[in-house]
Image 1: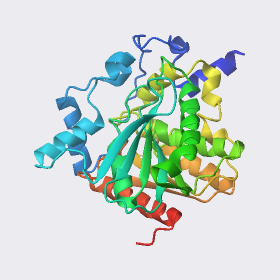
Image 2: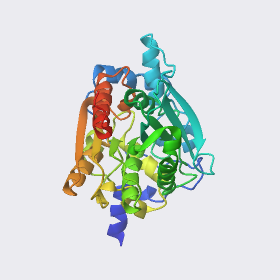
Image 3: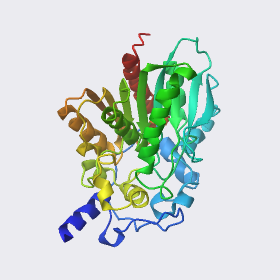
Image 4: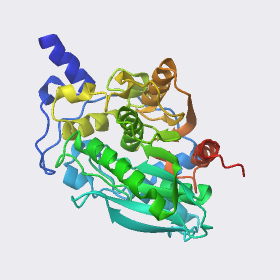
Length: 361
């Protein structure tokens, strides 16, 4: 029994002293962060320019904060905007896309932001259900505006960016339940918004990348309309804390390995959660899933998650492509205006989605 508890603690990324999970209060004190001396690989110059803005904006180590305080820290989006301002670029939302917030459930956090291209021709458009990141504890649809806005514009698509309940106020599996409910809601309403339900894809970043794949599994298991593609950007997918990227990117920024333990402390209800196939996707039944694109960053403790998920999906017979972009970090996908690696990843994802939607131009 003791060996099982030690294994579970390792999977959660905790020391024996921090095995217990947090209360449901967003003011609950964080667990003591582990110390890891490994230095991450060097970032590309343009990527480092964004990372350098974070301490200038006053970012404190997330793993040392309560959720309430963590939620008001400057984000990678704020750092990107700071670099854009230095370059004389506008940080205003692209007017080529309009947005509207709509509820899909009764809780105030159960709503979605619907992105539509202003130049829509009237013909039915592809639909992308997008889930944002933040470890299921921090961030929201405002933080993660860049990717859904870009996808809507470049693919002439309706993008539904799903907000969901956050932990620790609503612990696992609340976020997955919300993701699944939102998917059903989109299936029921996409046509009335001008969307083509036959051209529907799932997408997400980080925790949202996990939700995208988990929702594809849910759709398969519940005989719902199957998405034509899944785009998972640096998804949470493997509960092992001994993966290579957990060590080589232990002190990466803006996401480090200690933060993975911090997130787990607040979103899980117990050690068994970490092996639930909705979180530990590599242990799920992955057979019969849609074609999938997995995007990873080299300097990211979640890099190995995407790499091992791709291997597991291939073993299950799925069509999957995975690319790790060099010189970039977690959160880079929304930085295409100032980071070349992000621009390249954006274009790669757009090409893959165009093929899935049958778009030839």
